[in-house]
Image 1: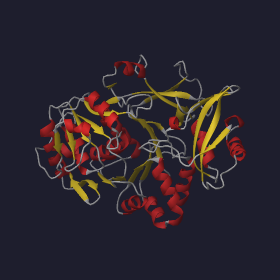
Image 2: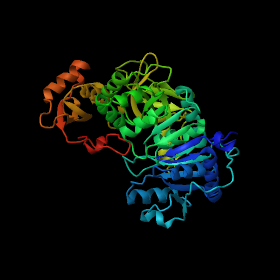
Image 3: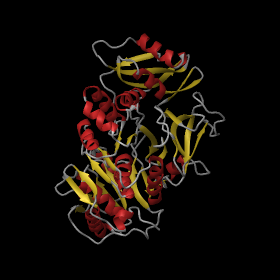
Image 4: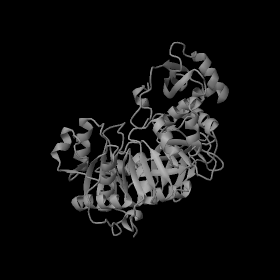
Length: 482
């Protein structure tokens, strides 16, 4: 069996592995520090990690994984009730944190180990650990109840990162920059473990800023990972910042994920830099499923094609595969492959409900598939699929159309009950000029002219801001759904 991080276990050298601000670690230093963590957590089963955006978090998670234990990354912004649930559910044997970090009351009951990146232990060796063994327990957002702990095996991490290396031509020569949180799949698995598996380097901004991203891309970084909110800020800044445009133009790969990047922002970035942002699609339970390939067409509004090893199909409401492709053939995405989680911790009922009898995972995401295999997400089954007048309509394409109107800064689309149509389309708008918002009829006509008359909003509601979670996703349930 092979290591999750060959560059750490085989022959760690003096090239830089991690940099957080001015603080960096070489591969040799990271191997030594991770080895010290591993010596203290080996045999502990599950280990909580207070996942601040720091070197200590990276060292803690890598040390836990190389010791063959499972890390439970904790969001430092979690409330007390949520933390109590996660700790009760996952029952970690101890908590790892940066020295001096004040932990909330629920965590103070656990034995604590302070992670010192300067500490030196025996070089770790995880080559005998079972690939099916748990590596991470990552808690979902819990929009329909308490968060569920998705148990992610080591093989899923390896399979996803190797598939992305194939799709993105990702090598040890790449230097990744990002400012993503480290308690979730995007920032932790892709953004930290990804470079380490390749033998490359990651520069973490601590907190994302446009200036920080430009500085690092102008200083040798080759890849940028972000969420749509970050790329929106970049698109807004580009017209007045030639240096930013130059830095982005020099990047090998710009990747957006965790939510759909509006087409309008795609086009603004491409026009200013000559570079197109690549989108990919994944979930906590599946890691990554699809991506636009580095050598493929970065088609705005799509998440590319299935990654190597991933099977993907679209199904009707009764579970039968869709018989057609194209813009009106909307179905739920189901996936199967080595990238999948193994279970929801302590939730056999939820685990069984998530899979079909023949092993397909029900994602709850709705999509269309183009003739050449490209997948276009239209939204979540629970919040973004609107059944109106006999049509199945995805909220995402309406949101993109609304964002093309100059009077719209942000947009979200939901459905609400309608006696005649079944559901009517409702647009929630943050106006570019709050003192002079665009007229509702004008917006409806704008959408009808770009898409189809049955996709126009029947109601428009103006808000100061859209509710978003830590990953920048719009929380539509907070907007109301009838």
